[in-house]
Image (cartoon, rainbow, N blue to C red; front, side):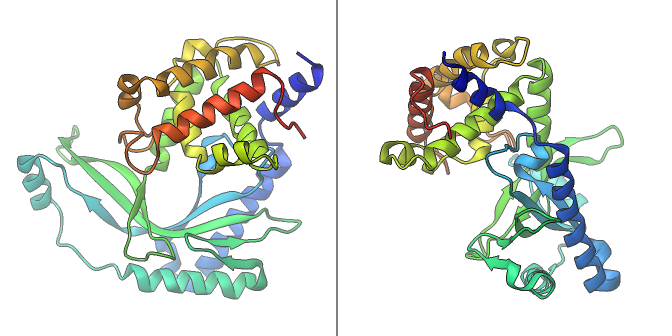
Length: 315
């Protein structure tokens, strides 16, 4: 393989430099400070949290923006167990439901952000985008509330157990609930990366950068194949590959790519195995909802074909 391809792939695998991580933390801290200062005593009810690739340790040099969740933490939304008996028991245990006034509060948070950052704020359908500067990096900000999905089991103290997540509402559809589980996703990636001798996160970064190159290639086939593939889907696809296939050593990841990506293609191409794949955050089926098995398969096949014959734009 030409050295330029080796060098580019290995460069894509690298974690973010400390300076960029520091700017991301500065961005989070600046928004947290702004919310707390503007809300006064009510500011303690809100937390600004890193989310997405920065939280998961899979952020790439190809894309230097961050996702931030502004979360109300003094109250929570919840989801009851499916089993009728457990459902009734958890419902009796919970306190009376209280309207948290979420939509009004979200508008207040958005107003605070706009007042603070002014022309740097671009309102998008699903988030507010804050443009970066010399101290902070670009950030997509979504306002939400804590969410608990009760399992129907109890802990050692007899309390009902739940999976902790967040419930987000997009600016485009304020009544639509988007529920995700950032901590569960991070834990799944961390466990897999540990079992893979710390080599699965580098491969996730590589495939994300391949996607970025495809989207900016100017070639219709590549752009279409990469268009509807989010970072969280790439993470789930590669975590589904057994950790032992990642085992290797040194600074070159090509041998691992040759094992991992074809195995991921095989998993997605086979309906039976694809049906067992789950989203990392909430243990929901990976395909059949918001993501298409056919789209995921096409992306993996096109990406691997271009890598294998060294015909991917590598600028």
